[in-house]
Image 1 (cartoon, rainbow, N blue to C red):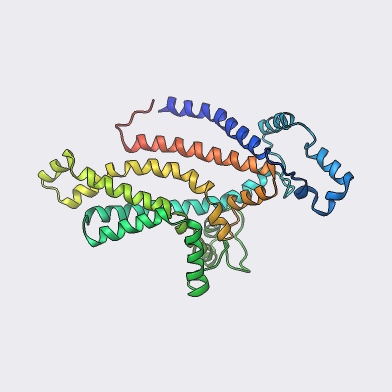
Image 2 (image 1 turned 180 degrees about the vertical axis):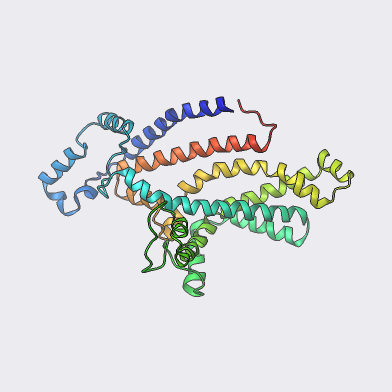
Length: 337
């Protein structure tokens, strides 16, 4: 196990270098210039301002020179300065990332808990009405586009019925909690501010639920199919022959083996949830890394775009590593090489 983890950690810098290189080259293949976001539309007609900005941001250099300079700065921990915000990209990402992590964590919790419960329920009620309803819900969750569902939910529960809060992480005129972790629900609890926690949690529920729909449907289908498959295995029949009830066999033996494939799906989906939060964050005005990526792409903010790709690559690699380790812990038959 230790040798496997060490090998994977040793390969990460090489993989991250490849991710950064691809992101850097792709972001610089656009024909348009980022000068409009740097100097503003009014100053584009001023040759002196344009020339100074071009030299200041290294845009007068060739692409290989810009690449070498960026990699050299990156090795020193400098991810560059955003063209749009004029702040270090690392500071922008550190400010935006907690909001996305909070949203993705709640979506992951919804997918795992609800998906497992509904999958087990459907397996126990195979062929009955409950099974059919759960399977339809799983199909809809995996098929419906999240942006459409998000807009429908906002219109129905917020604009029409008024039973859900509107977009944003907090209600209007509500002061955010002290910035300890960047997670509003956690920071509100640490500050002992229960009304603020309730407000932040209410704003978190709807976007997290919608964000979890695709993964939720996948978890339901996997748990149901694995439960049905494991019920017919030799160890399940032996347990029943020894006098265990069907419920005991399902919950103490079958479920543990059925849940193993879910670990792989969930581990791979962590990175997808975090980096795929663009649509949800845009619809719900969630000030996270997804909206930061969209704003940076519109402004041709090369350092910010590359920084987002670097953070996303780190998240994917770490999530895959943790998934492999968790798989071996849950299933002792797995041998890592």
